[in-house]
Length: 192
Image 1 (cartoon, helix red, strand yellow):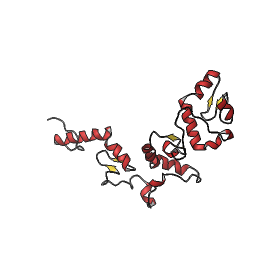
Image 2: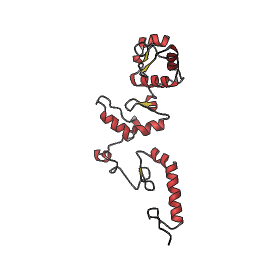
Image 3: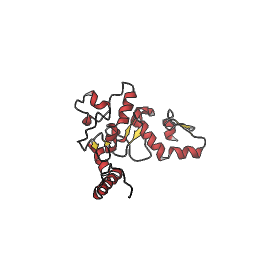
Image 4: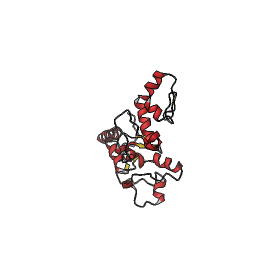
């Protein structure tokens, strides 16, 4: 109840504006405000809007013990794409990916920060970023897997692919085909 009173502009007895939830009973209100889902959405809300949104400048205690700090926000969520991340590696991969770039283009020009500072590309010509086909370097295994015909945005994505199930399955298939004297691209012949 204290949390609701202190932050009445985002929480009320009847509605949670952060989660867009209508609360029609006391038990529903308690269950909602104590849920992990609510805590995660509040954490995301705070990382996007900052703690200045909270009334009286007080820091709100989150239900889970992990509170966001300004230094780690980018590794926990992307406010532009409305996504949360399970690890810094996943966050970095997201910031370097196509979905984030597309959402950045759709955003207003006031949002400038796209990629973590240490990851800004030096000076790439605009033509190399414009399409996936132009960016394919079939000789660089950090950018392209010739076995699976998969492209990668960064070496981390490539590494994840090479240890993944799909790639291992293709490797096994390729080895079996070579062992039995057929190329992987050759059609299966019928028995004569």
